[in-house]
Length: 408
Image 1 (cartoon, rainbow, N blue to C red):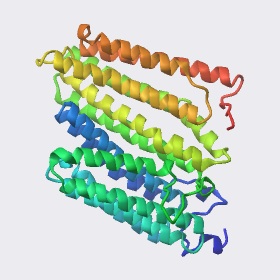
Image 2 (image 1 turned 135 degrees about the vertical axis):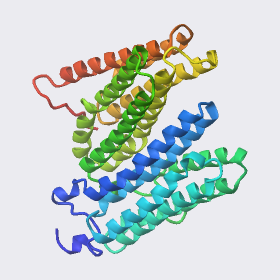
Image 3 (image 1 turned 90 degrees about the horizontal axis):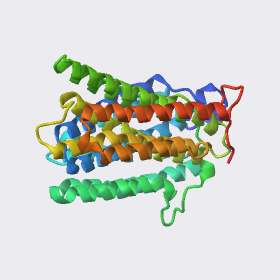
Image 4 (image 1 turned 45 degrees about the vertical axis):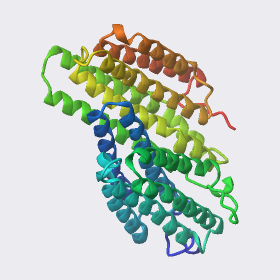
């Protein structure tokens, strides 16, 4: 790549060699912040098992996901090995750690710390990227000017919610997440600045696919940590061991559902697409949040089963909650996989829909089934979907290990 293509100051990634697709060590280092964030989110729901905390958890997941995925888009264009970009990522890491430390009390005494660091992170990154594009790519420069304006608008909501009474904070922050999520679909339209064009979203599909896959590995790793810690601290009886096996099996099945065929197919599809930015927006920006929610809720459900394999002392209320987490988390994860695979060119997979329907039936039978048994039955449903998905993959690609891609 010529010096002109790397301007200004060599901040942009090369686009004509492997550097355009490589995930750098500093990006992996940056991801460590989100190991902490995911741990904080899951622990909060484990300690307060009620509907209000669940809604708060979903809002926090949305906020954390936007921080991570927006940074992933930026490092798709900027060169993380350049000292200025690397310095920017280190600052974002510091802000991310502060933001994550506030998660358990984000709807309480640490609301301002959570909102303030997140708004600073989002706005600072957008301004830095706009400056990096200013001389060499005017379309991308204008895109990030629009994004910075959207960051300001959502920042008003986040900071306003931090100062608002606690009973209003949830609604204000819910609005902030909705506005933030709507930005890419509305092409960050700003009066006087127009809207972003899809043709300017010239991302590296291979890099985007790998980054999202690595984030899912982080969340699955948190599930294993939760399971291992709970088992280590509990009684080493036969029921606890069966609950541990059920939790490990659910994590393994979730890995298979996405990584066995879906991840590779998605990477091939976006790399060969004529509009990789559009595919990245749908398949790698919006849909993965369903996978993240499914995995995190499964981890919470697994811990409850480890502690109360035959049900709790609180009666039907806890059983209903546990059954909802066990079945609901798997339904969300299956639907996320279904939408992802369709977004990367596969037909609607009936096995995933059938699996989600079977889990709904299991939920309505929860009062007759102990949590441990329900967990294994949910795993049986996921295992059946994994097998059906593998058979479907073989039918789509006879005589080849590579999936056929449906071009849009």
